[in-house]
Image (cartoon, rainbow, N blue to C red; front, top):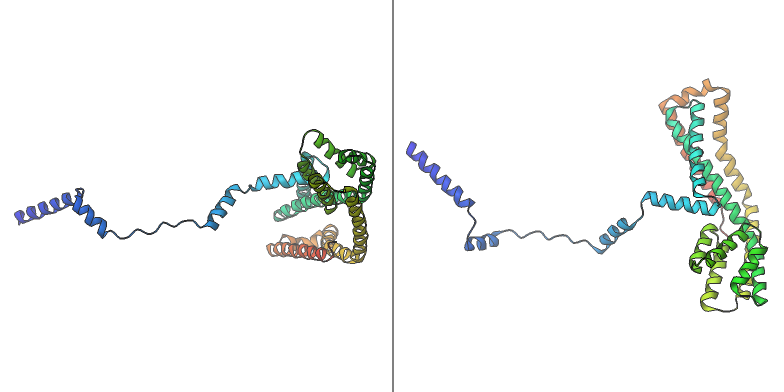
Length: 309
C-alpha cells in the first residue's frame, strides 16, 4: 500500500512539473489553435469621442458661475466685487431674518434663498432699466452719427461726436468703446464687449451696421437713418404691447405675493395659531410644496404676459 502511494505521489509530482514547464513550439502552436477567439475590443464611436471631448473641454461650474457674475456686473455697470458682496449680503440677511423670526431649521435655507433671489431681482431690474434707457437713447445717437457722416467725418470721428452729445448710459458706453479702440483693441472685440454690457437687439443692430460698413464699405449714413426709424417704430409697438399686457403682469404679481404676505401677517399677529402647522414635518413639506407651486404659477403667468416685439 505504501509503495502504491509513493508511486501515485511521484506521478502527480511529475505531472505537476510537466504542466509548469513552458510549452515547446508544437505545444505553443497547439495552444494557440485551441485558444478561444478573443472578444473584439470595443472602439469608441464618433459620437462618444465627441461627447468625451466636450466633457473635457467644457468649463466647470465654477467657471460658468464666474462668467455669469462677470456678465451680470458688466450689464449692471457694477464691479464684480460689488455683485458678489450684494449676493452674499442677500443670502446672509435672508438667513438672519429666518433666525430672528424663530423659524424651524429647514426654513432657513429657504429664507436665505429668498434673500438671494431679491438681490437677483434688484440686479435684473437695474440691468433692464439701464438697457431700456440706452435703447431709448439709441435712435437719437444714430441720427447724430448719420449727420456727422453726411458732414464728411469719418466713422471714428462721428462716433466721438455722438458720444459727446449722448447722455449716459449710452454716451459712456460709446466713449468706452472708443477708448478701447484707441488702446489697440480690435474693433470686433471692442464691439462684442459693448454688446455684453448692453445686451439688446438695438445695440446689436448698431454693432452689425458698423462692422458691415468697416468690412465692405457703403453708404452708412442711410443705413443708420433706416435703423433709427425702425427702432422708433419698434419702441412704439412695444409701448402698446406693455399697455395691453399690464393687467396680466399685475395679476401675476398680486397672486404671487398674496399667500406669502398672508402667512407673514398670521405669523406676526397670532404665532401660536400657525406655529404647530409650521413646526410639524407634514406642515413643512406642505409649505415647501405650496411655495414651489406658487413660484411656478407666478413664472407661468409672467411668461404669458411677456410678448417679444
